[in-house]
Image (cartoon, rainbow, N blue to C red):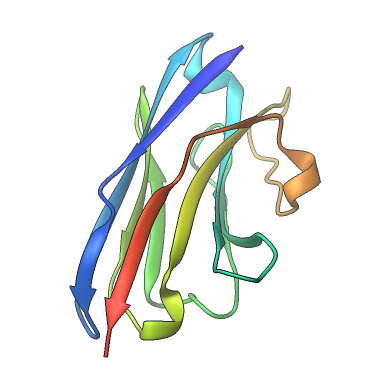
Length: 125
């Protein structure tokens, strides 16, 4: 198993930036593809970004393309969020899935096995 802990959320004005981190412990972090999802009040959890085990491939929701960047190192995954908008307000979750392929990415909630507890991001207008 792998345990995930998000950090870096907070309150920011529209146009501002935040960097979320996802610390992983347990089994070898490099064995897992990572994803970022978010859930706003009254809405379903939705895909934001994903990165392959190797870090070579990434994918983004259309709503965040050009504003958000997903990355990873040996022990953490990151979500750099720029030009934030009020509609980005949500609880953000990181997730992990064990994959044999180093370049495969996943974009569905159901594809992921492990989840963090979430971190609140609030963007004021």
